[in-house]
Structure formats: structure tokens, C-alpha cells
Length: 548
Image (cartoon, rainbow, N blue to C red; front, top):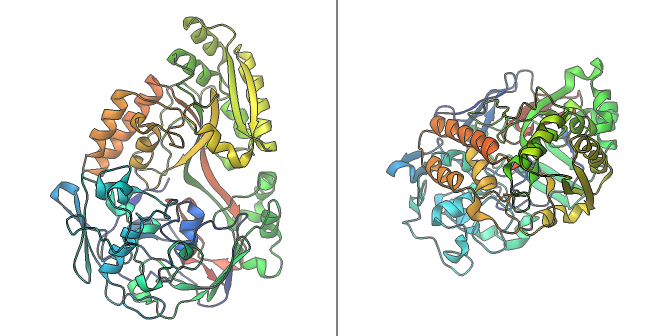
């Protein structure tokens, strides 16, 4: 388990530490099964968009990763450090480094950072993170306060100030001790107003990173070549050894994994930054011949089965469902332990303050405890329990549905399974009045603090269609604790308190069944060196890679 620490101003100085044996040149290849939905940094949220974006986009802070030890430190990227807080953590000040330039040589200034932040409020910027917008306005419906710079309106200095060309000051409405982590998300960087094409920027962003976009065919390929105006001496994170990145999109599985196994021709210089091996190939990769080029590490995602609290209102019934749940069989049906470790906590092991807890003894009886489930159902006065279970309609989840039916039957529970079209799945289960008792979701920490796990998934005051509180838990104690813990300015104390609240939720509310701490598990071509792992995003880190 890799702990991420916050670095100093010295850690934030460029250039990035040299990778032993590395050399410049060559073309590195990235194989991805899906297209890239968003290249605009303000729209980039999923880990694929963020990690590929790091090659051409810089943020105020970012993660510096040692390829030898895996040690990960949050440092200033465009900023001289990770920020200075004042006013009890409500105000955060950042200073830009000297020598920062766009791909056309234009200097990067604080007013461009301000414009980039203001642009997050625009009505077409709907897919990216919303932390900064909410923190600056104190509103979840922040566009009622400000809706972007398109009409010449700017955020006042009392909210976001640029006292000089190198300084930007964020004035939040409440304390946010983890602001330095939020500044590592894709939208915290500058945008050059003269190059802003609005919604069209999503396919042709302007570069301030080591690479610039040479060509882009959505869903098929993205080619990156060197940005001549990127200055390595300003960048503590990106070594940028390859001359080019050839990002191949729409590479279907299991062919993607098989190409990495066979590494024919230029595929010896290939990696999949984001995609784990196909489940059919997991056992193949366990062969010793792949050991030297295998990466197996935790991702920031915890997979759960949600219990719908609007329908299953008796906590003893929910606890019975948890006891009956066959986590080991589900893990096997999904491809085995390479996919991830058995989970018992709402918070995953990549998050600070993670503490193993197992209130239902799931690790002791990972195949389920039908007798305990029967006992609790009897106490609840429930006979012949029928559960409606929704699943994403693919062969993989059909197999899981069969596994669940068999296991629940041993506890006297009948499972009525209904497959939902994969493209509509989250839309259907995300409805407040959905007709299902049980359904599978997952959640990833946006940075290694549970402030990005517990509040978004457990706050009952935000329940609405599409809200990630999929179990629809609304516990007044949990809601008030979310407010109290969020104001703690010591992150170590805050992390411990989130863990305690997570344990309270599982014991007293039983809204979810955590079952898997996800892992990245795949190999890369042995023509590549310097391959390291970004535990914050759950991806391979492209910034230290070189072509041998």
C-alpha cells in the first residue's frame, strides 16, 4: 500500500529526477479499448482522460512518482509549491513558477489560471469535477451564482484574486484542508483565452505540457509530438523521454492483452496506461515469463452492491443480505483475485487513514453465512424474502447474477434478476424511484482522502436522480458528521474520522456490500523502461517511461 505525502517547495523544483538507464527518443504506444470522451482539461474526470491529459496539460499541483520505489509525493506543478493556507484553511494562495509557456511561446500568467477556473462554471462544462466551483460559491447549484466568463463576467477578487501576474488566491466559503489535492485534478490549470474555442476545445486543446496534439481521430487515434516551448527545468513530474506518443483507441479485448503478450514489432514499445488485462488472460499472465513486465497494484476504486434503503427499510434485513452475500464466488466469476482483493470497507487501501475493518466477518466466511442471514430475517419477522436485482446486461454480469441467485437461495432469499442495457444502466439505477432492491456500483476516490468518498456517496441531503448516493442513505447523524469532519484542518485527524464514520455507516445503516478493492493488473512491452504506477489515478504513469 503506497502512502501519498505532500511535498515541499524544494520537491516542486524541476527538472524531474532522471530515471536510471533512460534515454530520449522513440515512440511509446498506448493501447486503450475505449475512445477518449474529453480532451478539454475542464471536462476530463475519468482516470483515462486525466492520465493521458498529463502529457499535454499541466495543473497547479500534481503527483511526482519515483519509478524505483513507487514513492508518490504531491508537489507544485505550475505552482512553486502545493499552496499556502490562511484564514483557517478558507484561503489558499499559489505562486506560478518562472519560465512557463504555452506551445506557441506565450507566457503563462495568473489571469489565465483564473480564466481556466472561471471556465469550469460554463454551461457546457458538465463532465469534470465540481469541487472548486462548489467551494468558491458554497453552493452545489453553483451556476445560479456564476455561469462562466462567456458574457464578459469575471469572478470578483473576493472569490478568486490575481494580485499580480504570478499569484492566484482562492477564497473558499469554508475550510478545505485538502485543497492541494483538488488542484491536481485536470481543471485547475490555465486556459489561454485567445485559443479557447468553447465546447470545441474538447477535441483540440492548446498545450502547456511536454507534448502537443499532432493529430486526433476520435475513437481511433491520438498522436502527440514534442511541444518545443515546454521547459523541463520548470517541471518536477514529467521526464518526457519519448519523442512521440502513439495512443491507439478502440483496441478491443482480449486482443489488447494478447498484443502485449506477443509484443510483435512495435508492440514491444506498448503499454495500456489504463486498461487491466482481459479476465480470460489473467491466468496466462501469472506465468513466470511475464513477471518482469507485470504491474499489479491497487486502484482507488471500491466495488459495492447497493441496497436500496427506500425499499429495504429494515436494517436487520439489510444485514441479512450482507451476511448471505457470496463475495468470494463473485470475485471468481469476475476473473479471480487478479481483478482485486476482497473488500469489507467503503474506503479503499489507496486512501489515507485506511484501516481494515470487517464488521460482518466476511473475510472469515467469504462464501457467505446463510445461517446468520436466516437468523436475522427471523428476528425481523420476514419470511420468503424476494429481492429484485438489476444488473448491466452482459455475459460477465449474467454469470454474477447466477452466482448470487444460488447463494441467496441457501439463506431462503429469492433473487429476481433483471438485465438492463449497458448504456442505460447507471441512468436506471440512479433514479430515486427505481424499482430495484439490489444493484452493483463502484466509486473511486478523487484523491487519497475519504472526503472524496464518504460525502458524495453517503450524504442524504443530496439525494436526487443521478446522485452517487445510490443506496439513498439519509441518516441525520451521518449528515451532521460529514459537515463536522469536513471542517477539520488537520488531514491526518480528518482521515481517521472519515474511517470511523465509514465503520459507523456499515454497522448501523448497512446500506452497501463492499466486495472488491480494484487492481490494475497487466503487462507492458519489454521495449519500455521506467514504467511506474500512479496510485492516485489507478493507472500506469506515462511521465517516467522511456523507449529502450
